[in-house]
Image (cartoon, rainbow, N blue to C red):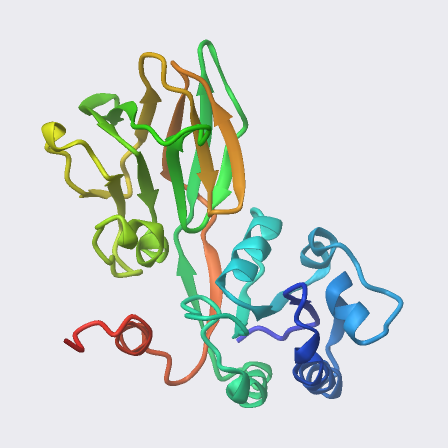
Length: 288
């Protein structure tokens, strides 16, 4: 097991009522002898002068403790980029699929982690590239999903063309399309009618958003070895949204390439962690 020399802590902005929880995390890490690196929000709550931008915290840290919801985990994952910095997520949000440790479990969770009583779980990420005629942008890393929708000026369907490994999959009209990882399958994709994907399965999900009935388009599960391309057809302008947090405009004729990234994100998993218990307790799966 790894010896955590430098531990970064980030907390969701606006979590002022969680100051005692934050202080407890900081005290436990400090007693262990690991060096602490605080982001600006955490430092402000503790009245500490040395808070850093999140990008600088993850650059220095061997491990990140994230106090917040799944959105805070996604922001941290984006800042981590290609670094091998695991995350321990303490849930201050609602569902908490990625930030899965409850506040009342935090002290024992950190103790287990510092004592080496944990496992590291890898979660696949997406490499997402915006394609313009004759050029392409630098790829971006995405943990949950890449969503192509209309430009949002008015509510209307868009025309999409999809290809898998260069071969046509289909053209259809819909409100949009979700390409998700197994981690992201319990998010937007699920709300749009997609399947829940086992996080250990080497697959990706494609889920149309409200497709026109004439297109007969259904969700599909593909091998994560596939290269997926989605293009806007005709006069459809669009928007590419990454993990629900970054928006990139798309013009008619432009597209998006999505494939499995070579750099997964890593999570600290503690004794007793059970993904399927999360499904039962947080999504009430099978409770009907």
